[in-house]
Length: 158
Image (cartoon, rainbow, N blue to C red; front, side, top):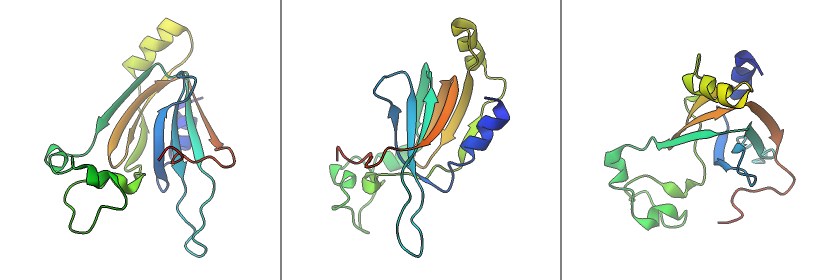
């Protein structure tokens, strides 16, 4: 996958909602689960889409929520969708998704990607994904984008 092809696939992220991110069950690949916005006429959503960062040896996640907001956001009531009101102060963790904004960017001439390529013997890429609550940096070999299986929901455990 060329950097231009990678950038084109990552350009699909903005406009969707990031519902989940984490390692897949095999613990080798890292996935972002996004859902498209609801159709304004019907209110229906298309199926979830999986961005699978294959062969992912390095992930860094950092909060984009400012420290002064964190200090007002530790109340467990802010985790529940049913306890947050307009009078609540702090970050609303109960939204169950975040906007990938400003989005994703390929890190050009990545030292991390070069190092992993030298160690493993395949080409690697590095991307930075900025969303409302998290900044995610991934080093991986390939990106696969696919519809999530029928019935899939990242909220099943909630």
